[in-house]
Length: 428
Image (cartoon, rainbow, N blue to C red; front, side, top):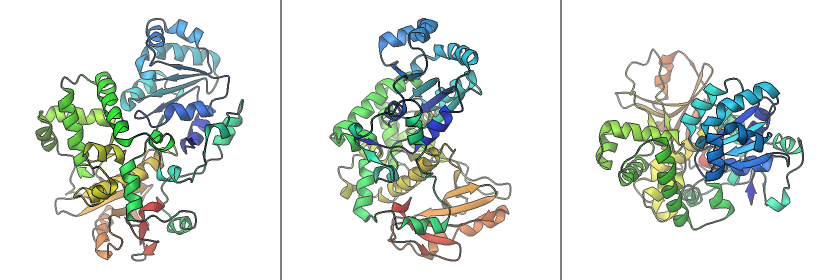
């Protein structure tokens, strides 16, 4: 079964505007599946996972492009960056939009190198796992046999029917969504958190333990070796597990280094690897010249809560919900959903957090223009007005303070005051 992706619209528009489109993201998030479904029959598919294809692409890129002529989808493009100058020559000569669709599993390095080599010629689109709205049917979920690829532009036209899904900052929209979303209770939300966001977990329903075990092994053995020289894979596994145990927390390299048995500089390098490969996202503290006592370390969030739960060895949604990690992984789920919602519209997430040396903290701040929207994230169904007590610190920024509130387990949208609301987590 294929679950339609909100990013289909972004890819369709980019393909009409740029000669090359690069979709980057962690393994198994559905990059290739989405592009194959969007592609018309004239587009050639080639994977650089194949040693034969990879060798040709690296050693004779000109011949490679003669054999696999555009329009072409080149999968796992990070294995043959030698193709870049030849793709540049080709697109400058033919000047056709959408000729090259590329996928890569190493986000930062790929984006940097592709953007530099194909400046002005490529759209780089980050992709993550399924959002809750995709999973619950806000997009159309159909079996592959029910959705044959149409020839020519028709597939792109179908993608263009996808709705805009960036996290809404409009209270009226939150209320309107109550009519289209099915309410979820505590264990349903934690069931979603425990299961994670990988498309294969929903379409093929593999054994969860086996799936994530294989995922970690593949990630360690392939991506880690490609991105950086990690001499001790077991130490790196301890490190990624330590990061999972601290999801939703401020980054402290000394603590991560201690748990993994490595030096703080190594911990810093390894965390950049996890960010590079899309496993973790760092949310930076909100900075303003008028805020002088802020904590400057970023917070880290796992982008797939299922992987996070697997690494920290919770064996069910029930035990996870009852654990000491319950609040942190709930916050991780909410933050990752908001971040994904921006990625899914082709936008950089304008998300920050606030914490100062007086222990005043705001979990998330969404900045749009000159307006700040503050949010707290609480597992409680009735967090209380005290939850927004620190929002007032943003007045010092001299910026407009827009609608915000507490994202929690409330059963509906309720006002906290004239500008803030209780927002059910299942509405995001």
